[in-house]
Amino acid sequence: IVTAALAAAVVGCSGSVQTPTQPDVITVPARFTTANQDGSPKNHHTHLKGDEEVFTAAPGAPTPADSHAQGQAMFKVSPDGQSVDYKLIASNIHNVTQAHIHCAPAGANGPILIWLYPDPTATSARPGGAGRQNGVLAEGTFDNSHVRQACPGGAPTLADLLDRIRDGNAYVNVHTDDGVAPTNQGPGDFPGGEVRGQIR
Image 1 (cartoon, rainbow, N blue to C red):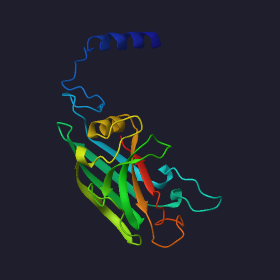
Image 2: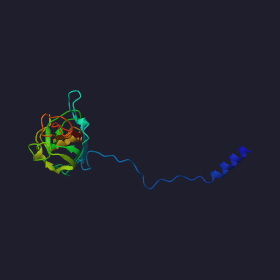
Image 3: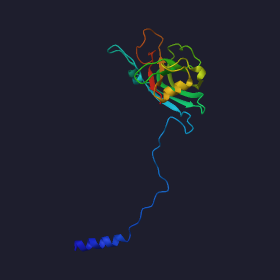
Image 4: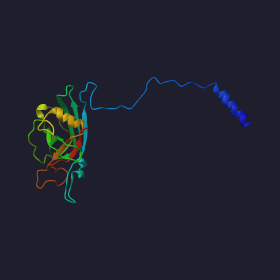
């Protein structure tokens, strides 16, 4: 009886088998590259936090990793690659004195190439003890004239900096200082840098 029932079910279903059709739209994950189709560079960004800082402290002493500060930096490269618009956001941070793009891979410190805060034309830090910062810290545009020095083994040019960024060898660093000696006493007082992020 069971065999007969199964046979009847197979015969009944065989007439209703349909050939699957292809969908009109196929969705695939997006893949982002570091260049547009015309070869010009794409936008870049980084998330900044304290535990990205390269910092050596005495046992038990404060480090930037103790900071609850966060940051975000966004860079929009012009189609011709001759200038970069940027926005730097920093929140839950105190006593910001300066911020830059530095040249070095993750896990290493390197020289300043571009000043971001106060602005790309700056030559010195702001005074310490400025208080709490939440939101946009700086925004503007920099170009070849704002590149301060060369990366090791490179040239002091925007083109070289963009190459370093694409290779993961540049980072943003936000420095703090409470204006009271000694330094490195905790969040709001890390003149060497409180939050950092490699630019991608």
